[in-house]
Image: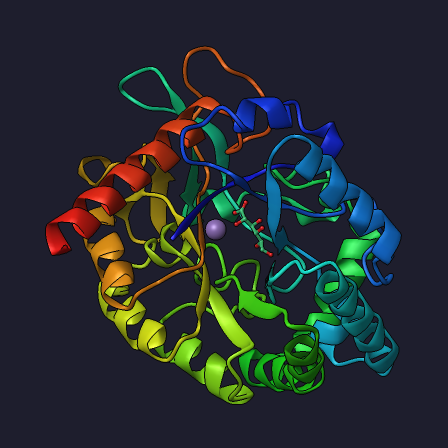
Amino acid sequence: MIPAFRWFGPADPIPLGHIRQIPGVRSVVSALYDVPIGEAWGRDRLATLKAQIEDAGLCLAVVESIPVHEDIKLGRPTRDRLIDRYCASVRAMGDLRIPVLCYNFMPVFDWMRTDLARRLPDGSTALAYDDRALDAIDLSRGTGELPGWAATYTGSELQALLAAYRTVDAGRLWDHLGYFLERVVPAAAQAGVRLALHPDDPPWSIFGLPRIITDAAALERLVKLVDDPANGVTFCTGSLGALPENDLPAMIRRLGRMGRIHFAHCRNVRVTGERQFHETAHPSAYGSVDLFEVLRALKDVAFTGPMRPDHGRMIWGETGRPGYGLYDRALGITYLQGLWEAIARSDA
Ligand code: CS2
Ligand code: MN
């Protein structure tokens, strides 16, 4: 297991120098945030990012994410050109020896919450989700007012996109994912890059849009779509853990034995009702995810990939990007390393 930490590039209020001071962390997860979706990532731009990280005494271990253009998910004719560009970006990663790419295949929206600052009993705040509150969100004004969502679509753009998805049900979305992977997996394998698909967060349909990467059956179907070691997953305990029927350690054992877990996001959530949860501090006692059993399973399948803490709470008066403050995530990765050390040493 390689402890890692996400950094949002030079615009991140958290400097690399602070990340360098977290015990055990030498690996950074980052991306180019200003390349328009659908354009190929230039090797030089990526090399600059990598050099910046290395100058701080760290290494760029994972790209999270290269966004997948909606036309690819919709299966539109323009997808071939867009997939070629995606492959070019993957090759740029390979040239620079960046080994893992985390990406997702969620229509229109990435992770979704209905409250970005739910106050917990200890005075900290955390991200929360309640399906009933989602119904109250008015999408006619675009994505600008959505919690945590960068304002990327105006009202009319968003309506056009939602209309286009009316003919794309889960079955067709699977077809489009297959089409994408049939072309991108060989390019990744050749470039020495492992693809790590992030599960949908939350793992169910929102706003009537299909979401397919939600459970054990879906993860297995995914890795078999193109049966190549380069076609793997990001195992995100917080995303998958929002669905109580997901048996996370069992899923890790199956996928891990297949050699398809290329990256781990480890965090905790407390499920408080049907399609209702809030995020918590990382330790097992605080939420519904048993992180000890999760790490035990990762250890049993000899997981050697990068692992990062995921969203943290806001604590000690910190302000910043929701889910991505320094303090609680630093506590999280320290806790995860403690668990890992204890499991490794008691095994030895
Ligand atoms: C991340 C996702 O912040 C998060 O929840 O896990 O935004 C993740 O980067 C993407 O879904 C992966 O493409
Ligand atoms: Mn995640």
